[in-house]
Image (tube, rainbow, N blue to C red; front, side, top):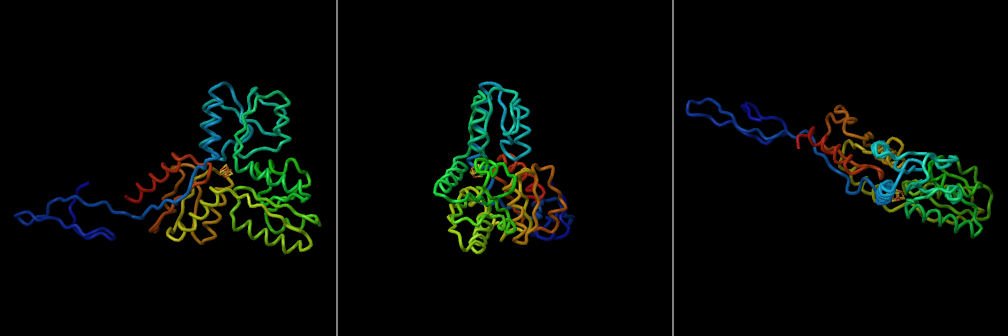
Length: 315
Ligand code: SF4
């Protein structure tokens, strides 16, 4: 863009118009005015567990019709793509699926559910994340040692349903109010949903220990490394940004956790699944806009949102 420079614009390096021999100003190139800076979190976006599950499902679908048991990723962009590729969806607890081949998601299922599909004659592709498996193994180990099973996590979340599905006596602790539901057991065996913020797990674990002084509380920390890294990167981002855009699905637990944590740092934040959902008025007066993303968000969704922000920023 070329135009006559007649005044110094705020925040723009001074660029003066050149005068011709006759004294009139001539056009010069004006450097783009940057409205704000866009900063991406050092760690964000799709984790290896969801990425590998997605790849395994795509590969299995190449071999023939396939139904995924649940949401492969809690992300509407991913789900639309799977549906467009003809990959169906059924609930893990359903009695049947429309295809003879089914896939378990990265969130995992209980042994009971897995066994039921296998015994019903379905060919099962199991994409359970190894770190979710680790949480299952930890809980099984605690129960084998005589502990009452306890899971720190969200009520009704698919991973928590999978973790507790083999233990009807299990207690889920989502907030301190749930602690009253714990039995007066001699030993409590506690694991965490893999995507819980570590600081919340620490607070709830402390509260369990305080409220149940007569019980031995054996805790196995099963928050996964990608969740931990993303939470740490968020802390650094929130020190810099005065607004954060979180790219992720509306049903994604870890995306919700990211938004909650950013707001707890006192920084406003909004979740979007795609660039069209970002509203320009959110960014009014911002100097630094941060970007982070949930563990089920496709890299191209993050890139598209960041591109949109950089365009508005004038970068
Ligand atoms: S969030 Fe963690 S546990 Fe869940 S799929 Fe990703 S790596 Fe695995």
